[in-house]
Length: 398
Image 1: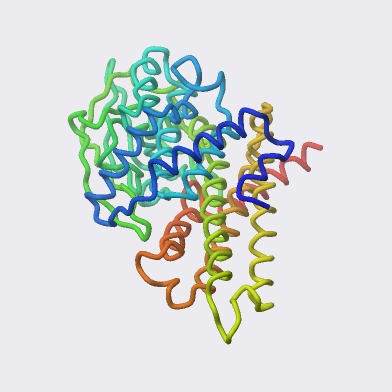
Image 2: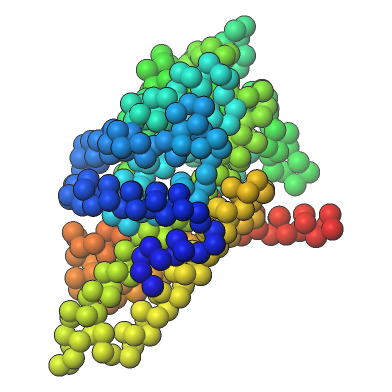
């Protein structure tokens, strides 16, 4: 099976195969040059890739057609195909594309016509970098515990608090920020309920918003902590009705969580490709590595697990594109694809031996790239809770 033959599966249409071919050609021409791990190099690469993706029309898949997008609604299969293609070449390019979609998704779903017209065409053209500011130091997986506040003051809101682990923090032109407009209701078990959270779009140069810290992680990404101190924004910058922020965040994540799985597939596919090439060229004990049964068994496991993860991923995308609610299916896809990719890449490192842990080797970079995917947009353990919650809800209502 070639890297692209899965597109013959019944999940896809001709336009998806054409999209894959065009993005792959773009990647061949524009990606592959090494970039350093230094923050300045990473920042510059992300900005450059966003500009190029915009010029190539690839960012059209992040936004709906009425603001320059490619389709009337989010086409999750297309978003996932783009992410898998980009991730196979360059994890940072995938990150740059993904953040344009995730960072502006709440605007597409719940922004007023004026807000959509102000931001979304610039996102499509690659002229404005977007960010999704949901997490806090004590509210990562437990979003309902957030403490960042937005106090209504006439025709404005005043934001106070902090957001951390924010992708594109420090280079974004605007942030979709989620904050408490009402105190949290505390349940009988002591946990916070998700109500009372609202969503806002905040320009990066708004007085009272600053970058408190830049964060370095194992796979270098632009990431930072946002600080809000008396940050006044117009009430018209709110996305949706007051108190709907949690629902808006979850709707956004339901769309893009499946594409996280697709990015993991791209990493895993590259690891498999590199492993096959290594097995064919590396000689050991007078034979090719590929001639050893243990190597053949490893490659068989890698290919089979990759296809299984792909089936779950594109099932979730296909169902979402058909109008179905896919909270459970997206969680299954995200959990399975990221955990599978970690195992496949680990086997690839093992096949490469000492080379596999050398800085600058492709499989070493993939090992660092994939690790973060098992955490962001909901860690694996959170995906299990989501799946179980959905199963229990379905069986109770049956």
